[in-house]
Each structure stands twice: as structure tokens, then as C-alpha cells.
Length: 331
Image (cartoon, rainbow, N blue to C red):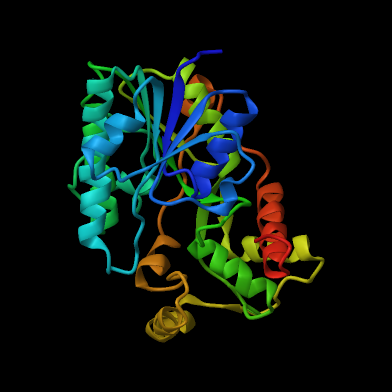
């Protein structure tokens, strides 16, 4: 086992925490660059440093004696309120990470990109990896910033080994930061989501399966390559069924159509905002349910050993974790 560090930017979100646990479980020396500490990291054998990816000096200090950097820190926003921050963190921060890797002699950079960097999600057929990324054809600021950041990372492939992983919708236990899907799960557990939908689907991947694939990419991934980490396509109605089964309940019988949902989207979005909940349902999230989510994970399976577990297992673990949190068993 290498005596050098594996450094993670952003270790408290879905993907970051899953990776921390995975690497620590392997006995690796792990260092985290954090904005602030969080109880979810208690008991994990890792070094903590505090700083911001927007500050090059913080990155250079954190990357000292590092062999591998996993750049996960980023801003996800579908509310339209954090566009400037997304540009500073997603694009500027990634540029800083790349430069700090070069300056400190980091050997490998694994960057967590996104399938939102693909402009062809309303086309038919199977979506596979691209070799270049730009803002062309992308509408949301988040998608644009992730596409540009992905290209910034790939452009460094001649100076260090760079692999980009591109997850679909990340779910799983340990949702300490409060995701949009987590907010929906909480409402379902409380009985406040009594209906299903007759339309819409999305592709979900377990954060724990991502962690294993990311570590595999360090050894087996090819520099300058992207790997789609797509798990399973699940309709909204199927998702409701899986959640109900995890709780020992019956799935909601009533399924509402898009025509019925759409007029209420502005109101629901406003209520979510007033309740300080993640934007679970707005015009952006509604459009996501109609995208082509037929992503191929064949390349990731073949080259970095990506192996998504059954989606029923992931949703069960997600629901039961949220249930424990609501009951106060998880701080």
C-alpha cells in the first residue's frame, strides 16, 4: 500500500462520503479538503484539512505528498439562485485543482463530472461517452459548468493521469447534506406523497458502487477518458413501488398524469422554497423526467470494473436510512 495520500475534495456529500468510507476500509491514507467539519466523518481514520477549491494555496497545501486526487467538490443547483457560485466552484475550482495537481506532482486525478454534460439527452438511442465537451447544446448553467470543467480536466491528460466519471442520479444511504431525492423520500415516509405518476423515469446509481469504480479507475482507467456510471432506469411509478416495499406498505394506487402535474409545479416549487427544502419539483426537475436516460455503462464495466447492484437494494437502503434519520437514530 502506498505511503502517499489519496486526497478528496468534498468528502461529506453522497459520493464523497461513500468514497471516504471505501478508501479507509481499504487501509489507504486519506486526506480530506473540507469547507467545514461534519459529524458524518466521526470515527473515520482520515486527515482533515480546511480550505476552499477556489483558493489555490489551500489546494497546494492539501495535495502535498498526494499520489491521487479525487475532485468531487462542486455546486449542484436547479433553483437558479447559485449560478455565480457554480461558475466559481465548478469551473474555476476545477481549473485550480488541475493546476495544483501539476504543481505538487500528483500522479492521478479522478474528476466527478456529470451526465448533465451531455447535450443529446432528448435524442433516441443509447448515450455513450464523448471525447470532448463544451457548452454547445446545453441549457442549464449547471450542465454548462460541468461540461466546461470536464474539458478542463481532460486537457491535463498529458501532464498527469486524468479520468472523469460521469454519474447519473446518485442515491444511497448517508444523505447527510440533504438531496432533492432525499427530500422526496422523507415526504414519502411521512405519508405526504400519497400519489404516483403515470409518466417519467430516471437513471439511478448507488454512491457506494461509484466509490469502488472510482478507485478502480486509478489503476485501470485510461488517461483522458470518461466513464459513464449509470445504474438502472427506473420509472417514477416503479420508484414508488420500491419505496413502499422497503417500508412494508402498498404502492400508491393513484397515478397522476403530466397534464395534471404541470399546472401545480410553480406552487409546489414555491412551497418547497418557503419550507427551505431542496427543489424537489420544478420545471427543471420535471423536464429531467422526460429525458432519454438510456445511458450505456458498458465501457465502465469493461475498463474499470463498474458493477451496479440491484436498484431495489439501493432504494431499500436509502429509504431505511432516511427512516432511521427521521426517527432520530441518525444524527
